[in-house]
Image (cartoon, one colour):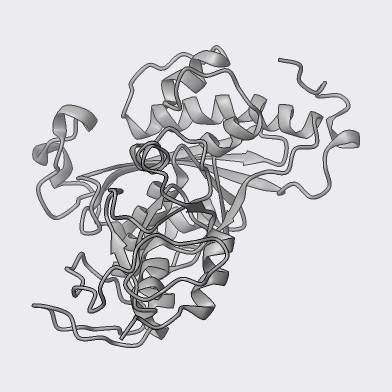
Length: 324
């Protein structure tokens, strides 16, 4: 792959590109909303992707460490580690004013945002960039979208997979040639907005089954069971008609609006949030319809309509009432 000559980078670099990046990796106790960070690493890069410095910390999750066989961090190792509020300021300083870069950035961003929400604060991040999305923009010939495949494509050697510091190093080294390839072709970077979880405080409270709602400022919402949609499923969405209350809507992949906020808006409109795609699904919302995820594959096999996030948010503005 041809890359820009470093001697001419300053003169040819796209003016619209960000001025700095924070390449991040976090290891966690699991994948759910109430899981915690056990380690975090940040590589700070300049506008052209050159490494400025790096930082790593363990974090005491105040609970079981989860999949030790993946991240290798036992309760004994984490017992003396700092709590997240104790490293939050330093972490924020590493992120401040930069675009957060991660492999599957939605996951890393949401885990970080939840930790800051628990600490009654907010991470100073306004935009994120997913290296999976960037590799797709560049049409890299990868067999899959794993970090190890991206690393191998650029000749980057992984030493300790699922170690936050090494994963962040590997990603930083693979991101730089990706960024240069994008700049050479003047590719628009797939930047997405990062909305802090504190925005949920503006959402109206709704009664929830078995849970007392609480939307205080700077609060974090733990996992909860949504109330059942009160309307019958009217069937599939048709492109020339509005959404109708009761329709089953599934989401796949990264979204600009925080996923939970988007799901809240869906529920408030009288629609059902489906956790998977079936023959009963009315609509799949995804910004990457070509991704070979289980949801997109099933949606295509069932003939389920697919729209992107921008189109869906427009449809949410005018949802038709349920029949009867």
